[in-house]
Image 1: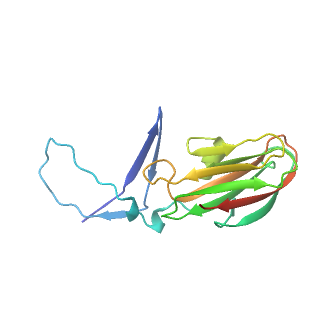
Image 2: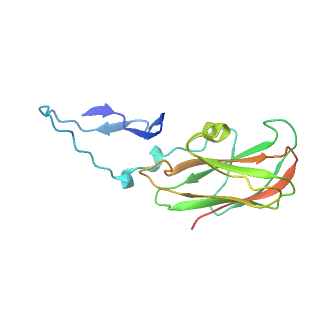
Image 3: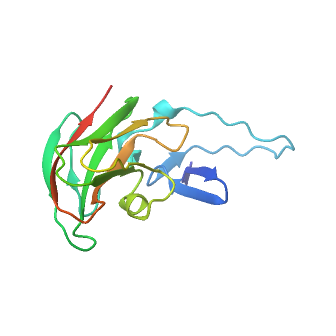
Length: 175
């Protein structure tokens, strides 16, 4: 047996995101003569284990699926006008919705995967809602293990668009 690491590459345009699916995976290896044919690969997304999923890390508050949390964005300069949360999406879930309500100022909602930097920098893997004024905000993400939005950690940023303070209710629901 040999120890190896499984890599997943997702490319979009000129950007490529390479991430390890597992810390360490033991892979049985059998020596075979090289052939000119391309090796066949199979995709079995159901073989992913909980240990292989990205998990919430960093200065965030963890939100459970189905939960509503009360929060407040404080007026001021970055990062005071942003609040961060994280929800862990398990294997087998088809999607989820993050919503904001009860706003008294213009807040925006950003949701991204697989890490906090994706949300903070607005990179590939981020979805946002930026309705004007005190309108509710919502982001719905469909999970597809063969694409960008896989099970694992999803980071949520609530941002004061106009730099004014506002309380809010943040809810994470599933279909």
